[in-house]
Amino acid sequence: MPRSNRPRRRPAQPSGKWSRGAELDLERARFGIPERQSAPDGEWNVRRITQRNAVKDYSCPGCGLTIAPGVEHVVAWREDSLFGAEAALSERRHWHHHCWKTRSFRYRG
Image (cartoon, rainbow, N blue to C red; front, side):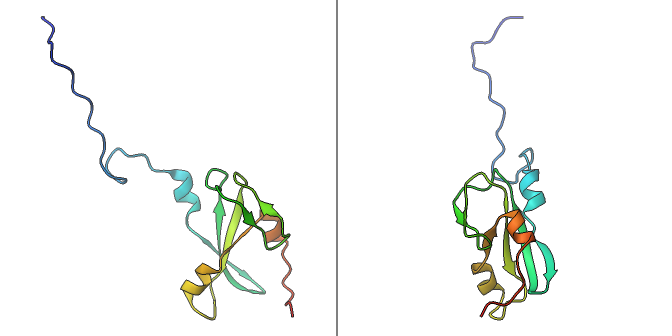
């Protein structure tokens, strides 16, 4: 069979983020949904940030130290905010895992 001089077609690339054949980022899908936690200081939404998704410096309110890029941590915001969901979301804070689990529930005056 003779060879053709025409170039071969490239396989079609999927267009768009969610088109068929596009890979689903399972890590992001699994940890992107916040978990609701009840505590003596209120109801909280807590989301885990993986090493890959931690790309900026944050200051942990528990210990006051910096959470460096590439360090796994949690983001927490109040579910039962007095000023509504949008205000609570804008006041979310990044915590070290240990600091979040061992935080003090004492009211500060």
